[in-house]
Amino acid sequence: MGEIILVRHGQANSAAKDEESYDRLSDLGHQQAKWLGDYLRDREGAFDKVISGSLRRHKETASGIGYQDPHVDPRLNEMDYFNLGQALEDLNGVPFPGPDEFAAHVPQVMEAWHRAEIMGVETFASFEDRVTSVLQEAARPGVRVLCVTSGGVIGMIIRHLLNLDPTRMAHVLLPIMNSSLHRVHVIPQGPILASFNAVPHLDRDDRLYAQTHY
Image (cartoon, rainbow, N blue to C red):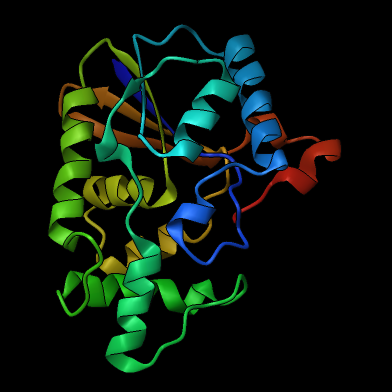
């Protein structure tokens, strides 16, 4: 059996208003990555391949885990949520949300993007195609792959595996924690979701504060 472990990056600059300023780990994000690296070395076997998106927060997370030179694949980069949010505001006046308002906002963005009413730098279909192509290439019997990526990519992979509609995909996206693990097992019938949103490296009383979403 093969296995793909998807890792969401550590906490980034959650106060940012654009992608460029968001794209760096906070001090806590660096610590989350280091703790995850300690856990993986203690509890997991070797990976045949380590892949990272090309964004700064991906590379910083991979480095913190202990992989200074992963294979970089831009197909693992996040959706362009800031521009999608602006497009939704331009379309129907929905303002960009604060930290506590994403639960209502994300489903609206996903539905409008899926219907091609809005677009950032790419269409929903092109985002889906690039993400699922990485999954298809990584899903090899007997091969273990670690992918450092973002919540939207993880949500899209789960949409593909479970055949979710855009609203249910949005509901999967919302609880994904920083530095969380998501396992995909590769069986003869293809890839299947084995676990979702695990943070074993943060599952202790003195690290509960580090279980962050944004």
